[in-house]
Length: 365
Image 1 (cartoon, rainbow, N blue to C red):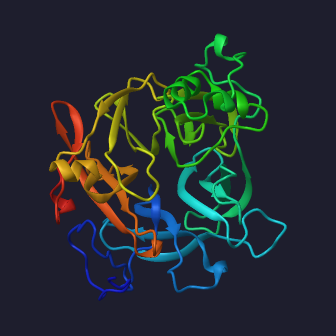
Image 2 (cartoon, rainbow, N blue to C red; image 1 turned 135 degrees about the vertical axis):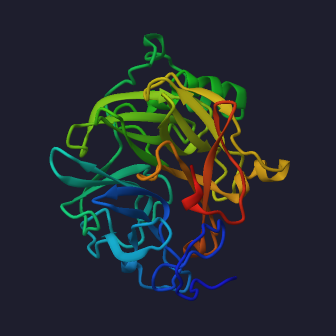
């Protein structure tokens, strides 16, 4: 396997799938992440994964990098780190994935949300965690983790689904009946009291400042778009089911040409699969699937060029330009996972992605 260190250099091109050295010559360790632009600087937050040889679990958390040109990134250290204390849920050995940070103009706080699984429990907890900071690069103070929307029905959940009596044992070994049952709220009812599952996630701030927490729920079979409170620290209880029973994860949203678009993937674990594209007139839907946005060979389209979506970046100095950010996961050594950045192009009014071995971000127009 290629090592994680490369010669320090002045990066002038994006090279998807290769080691991306930071200003110290080390591969950027910020996976499943997103970018926030603040005061003329881009900040990249992502999973800071431990190399497989690393034994100290306290060195794990959310990494932060800063850049003025989106090419050369300075390591700002861990913005959020696990807490070596058994009284907290955020302890060494837990899972932190898909961290995203947004800025609240009213409170002047930076808010981080992330998918959180508990130490020793695999992926059973399906929680989302939140942390806050006065400084964009951190440190962030962990507040809590929870399953959202306990005791609340989705806004777009039909009244007739609320009292159905189908349970999981009724559909065991019956895939078609399971899909129907999920569409009709099987897991919504199951998790109604304790809160809905929240796994792969992103954050999206609409043009009016309203923020949404978007996550895979219902055993990864349905996306939930959950409205955040004005301080971005809690859920309002207003949420929508999106593409029920279609098994989407890795959501990445952006607004372009008067519509809302979302890249996502299927649910095949660390293995890549065909990307998916959906569109809506409002962020809360109704969302319509548009198929696979990949425009490569048949094999490339089956695996989205070996990547999974995480974020869509719009550079501040380039109007109406968007960049697909994805991860090429290396499950046996997640710190070595590669970054797949590709320009979003347009074909018949639809956003698509094509493969480039290398490309110049300064030439986007």
